[in-house]
Image (cartoon, rainbow, N blue to C red; front, side, top):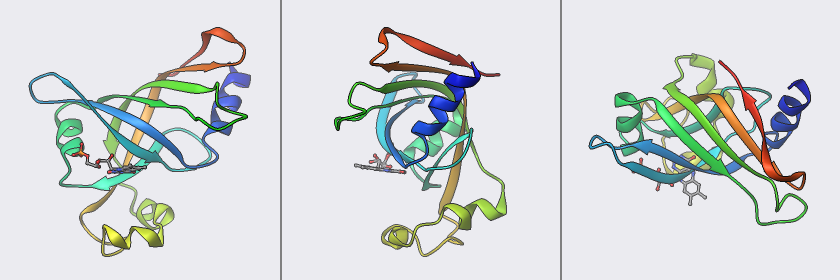
Length: 141
Ligand SMILES: Cc1cc2nc3c(=O)[nH]c(=O)nc-3n(C[C@H](O)[C@H](O)[C@H](O)COP(=O)(O)O)c2cc1C
C-alpha cells in the first residue's frame, strides 16, 4: 500500500489535466476538465471560480469522480480513476501558495473573492498501467 501511495504521489508531482465529474441537481453526471495542481500529498487540489456550475454541484453534493491519463510516452498506458469528496479550502495561505500569474486572465489576483481553491480528499484510486489489465487499488478514509 505504501509503495502504491508513493507511485500515485509521483504522478501528482506535476500539474495533471483531469476530467472532473460532479452530480447535477437532477442527479445526472456532468464532466469537465480541471487542472490538478502539483503538490506533495493528498488532498488533490484545483482552482476554480466560486460562481461556477461545478461549485454549485459540489456545494449540494461533495461526491466527485476524476479521471486522468496521458497520450504521451512513457506514461501513455498509465491512467487513474479517482473517487473523492470535494470541499472549498479555508486555508488563507493556500490562495497565494497555488496562485499562478497566468490566471490574471480569469481572476484579479490571489485575493480575488471569485478565486477559490478546491480540495478533493480521495477515498479510492484505481491505477491502470503497464502492469496488466487489472488496476492497483488504493483506498483511504
Ligand atoms: C486544459 C484545460 C484545463 C482547465 N482547467 C480548469 C481548472 O483547473 N479549473 C476550472 O475551473 N476550469 C478549468 N477548465 C475549464 C473547465 O473545463 C470548464 O469549462 C469550466 O470550468 C466551466 O465548468 P462548469 O460550468 O462545469 O463549472 C479547463 C479547461 C481546459 C481545456
